[in-house]
Amino acid sequence: MTAKTTHLDPEELPSNPAFTQGVIIPAGRTVHVGGQLGTDSAGNLLDGIEAQSAQAMRNVLTVLAAAGTGPEHVAKLNIYLVDGIDARVGYEASRSVWGDHRTAVTVVSTSGHARPGALVEIDAVAYIPE
Image 1: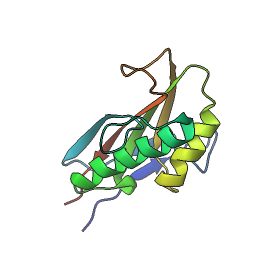
Image 2: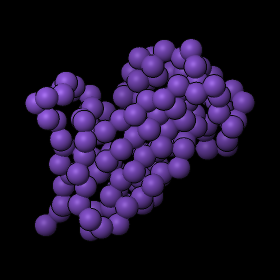
Image 3: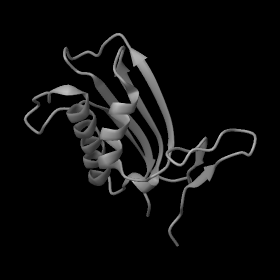
């Protein structure tokens, strides 16, 4: 039997087709994906928020796949955007890669990232199915 995530969408809170208010994940092995930037396999930072957001999400998916899991098993995404970046633009670019996998999401504005020129950083927590 494959365990599944359970989405929590209490009636007392707003509902959104893109994210859920909470996620219950089954006990077991978990992967914590470190913050991924919009860099290609050579470490080159891509240009612009659209390209960086899509690439950062591809990088998250690559780490998940290496752990033997995927976006359907992610309990939480954290997205860190540099101040002044339009979150909707970054969201649409990352969703084009992520797809329609609802999960709990936190979006935070920052003054910058450790790597100059990085506009977005994304990390995740997921369980690894047996």
